[in-house]
Amino acid sequence: MSNPKYEYKYYFIYKILNLINKKKYIGFHATNKEYDKDDYFGSGDLLKTAIIKYGIENFVMGVIEYINLNEWSEKEKYWIKEMKSHVSQWGYNQTEGGDGSIGFRWLEESKQKFKKPKSELHKQHLKGKNKNRKQSKETRRKRSDSLKGHIVTAETRNKLKKSNTGKTHTSETKLKIGLSSKGRKQSKETRIKRSKALKGKKHNLKEKTCPYCGLSGKGSNMTRYHFNNCKFKNEIILDIQKLLEKKEPIKNIILKYNISRSTIYKIKIHKI
Image (cartoon, rainbow, N blue to C red; front, side, top):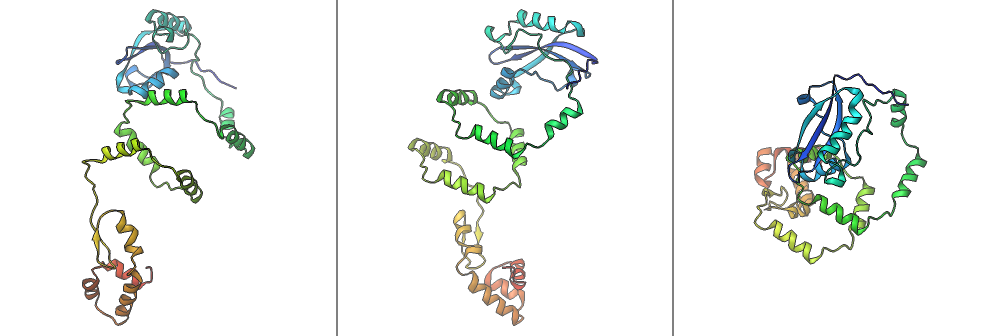
C-alpha cells in the first residue's frame, strides 16, 4: 500500500540540457528545499544513461516556472511539447508528460516486506533464470558504444577503491576464476595494445633484500623465491636459534645476517 503525501513548499517545471548534443529533458519536481540546495537532477531513464555516458559536468539544470500543484500535469505536457524534448524530437523524454507521481511514500509495512530476505527457492529461481544467458552481438556493441569516451572521475575511483578495500575472494571464487582463465590466450592485437600502454611507464618498485640469503632485487620474483620462500630460510633460522641459545648479542646477529631486530624476535618466539 502506498501513502501519497502532497504537502510541499515548492512545485516547479525544470529543464535539463546536454551541452554537447543539445538534447533536453523536461520534468516536474516537488520539494521543500530551495532550488539551489536541492540535489535532485532529473529521473528519466534515457537521461540517466546519457549522464553516465557524457558526465554530469556536461549537463545544466534550470527552473522554467514555479506552478501550483493542481496544474503540474498539464504544465509538464505543455513544456515537453514546447521545448520539443520528446525522444521523437531529439530529446530525452520518453512520454508526453503528466504521468508521474507526486511525493510517493511507502508505508513501513511495505518497506519491511521488501527488506525481508529472499528464500533459498527464490534465489535458486533467479539464479536459474540468469544462468547461461548471453547478450547478443548487437547489445554488446550498443553497450560498448555507450561507454566509449566515458572517463571515470577521480572521486568515483576513490569510492570504488574504498568499497573494495579489505575484501578478499573466497577459495571457491578463486578456483572459479582460475578455471575460467585456464587455457585462455590473449590475441596478438591485445598483446600489442598492452605493450604500447606500458611503454615508457616507470615502475614504482622498491628494492628489497632477502633476510635469509642477502640477495637484493625488485619485482614479483623476490616475493616468489625469497623471504618466507627462500631456500636458505630453515638453515639460517637454525643458526640464529643456536646463537640465541648461546646468548649471542642481538647486534652481532643483525650485522652477520643483515636482518631486523623484529625478525630475530619472531625467530626467538618460534613465529617463523
